[in-house]
Image (cartoon, rainbow, N blue to C red):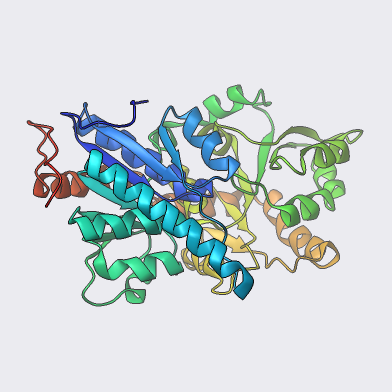
Length: 392
């Protein structure tokens, strides 16, 4: 739903703040959809980043997008002034927009892109909620949690990372409704796949993953030997041509795409998934209920994707292959696990059932209910749908 910016409206405004990855945006879109079901006249504005993925996802969804001039975090002292200026510019933008059209609630979706809006909301007395789908909270959420009205987490393990004074709700990570409804038949039809073959889905999330692309390409001979399988490989934009060329000439039945807006159908078609362990990706895998091999992103200092992956491994829903970055080391490690699971229908079925038991497909509706309560506390009710005036 696109709404014109500027000007106070009779309908309530919910602001989402954050971006930079699909993991920051897709749960927010799921919550927006659930809120619209409760408050048909609700308006949304996304204060996101200038990364292309934000525009790609939010414009496709028909959302009102405000791109903040926030630089990436750089510890080098000579970049601090540029970072400060970008942050201050974003803060002034948020304050100006909130004064002209006061939100009922501001929802931080994680990352630096959430900080200016959440901080300005706190100063203006606007209710704040944070989404924290990772098992180990990021720096932004740890910094903002003390002033938030509520923090929604996906995993019980995340609760201990927040101060005891914080109100933390274990809700799961919101997924879009189609992940609760998709069928294998719909997935096969969407990607024109053979119903008589099993399907391997390879994904590096919304932006792709170079090392996953490399390690799967290094194992094309293994995939070729399993002629009862087919592959959907989501590469990300930078690697698309290279990966597509690697499959060319092979006897593998494969659909190689840079990106898809139809992730629910991709998972619906899958019998096995090779993926990163981003929180949103795991929420989608468990909502649909699919066996997975997880290669957590190796570069984060806190290794939060590894912590996410272990939540599934403890439930026997996934296997971990540690990403050693070097394809020569990754190749054999993936080959062993991938070959085993592609050959073992019973084990994949057991893992898929375990994943489904972890799924919280209705998290969006639960979170939306809490957001409506916060909106009511700020002067908005489902019946009146009005925002209170600017304080002070």
